[in-house]
Length: 414
Image (spheres, one colour):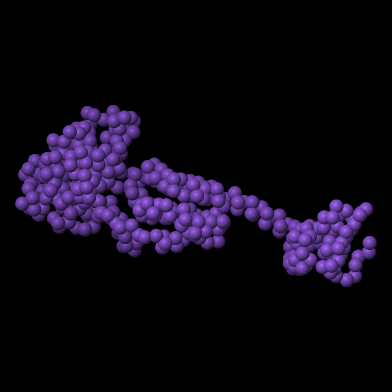
């Protein structure tokens, strides 16, 4: 049949049929309706490839799913691409591959990719485990297999709702923060244009900040007395004393290694990988701290860790052991092991030590970025004096030579 000179009408398209052979009805501009004897009608577009100049045919879709008007609209879009030297079939293939890749980039996969980068930053094993478990437990059941391009703010909000209803607002805060890290990773990797979860935290109530339970320095004699008679393992008592004397965090003290201890320089160097702020920290060891290590020598000097695990000596002691002991001693809700640092901070501030030296002893990082950039001092020598004073304070509290009536300022170094 000859090519028609005039455009098709809706009536012609609807009535088109053939019995013995296939039929092509032309609408102009390369658009044609291909009719099979089975009755199937397909829109096709014939054009010249912009690079090879060879004649090519592209299938657009079936009638009546794709109407005459819609087929003409697609034809004009393709002609616009051709005018720009773009092959519509190549663009279609790229779009399909992009969509396939997008569907493969599920939240679980992107989270795994992000987590691999997170692990390379040297975070502690228990911190990494906590991060992964929080997402695996609270978010994966809802969005694990969903493509990140299909995730919306509402998707995440609905997933977080059971946690919010249960009152675990601190968990909501942490999980929301981690969701944002994953989605920001996807944006930075070029997989998303924007992070749909960027502002979901504004939907939830903020958790009330609760300070770690602690006691005043004047109450330290009572604590030391309770510690001396407590029905706990010697090593547990010593790890509490070591943490108190070094002002270290619970996990840092419990994981102390013998190869980090320098008995000649009287220092304990905690590597950056085990520090909260990812910065190496050198602790001057007071005579009282060295006395604790001397006792532990006979117990664990043949082990890598100063305070080895009771169950598996090749591993460090569990940092929660100190908290469990304090609870058994009657300090539940009154003092936790992390609160030992607060006792030291209060005593040192009230004694009048320089705030910068105290903050350095606590291994805190200056919140002022400009000041932090210029102030690189570790105040090591000043901290030796501070730690010796603090060791003396703890010892006199333990021996009864210091009482609450004397006050913090009453103690002087010998």
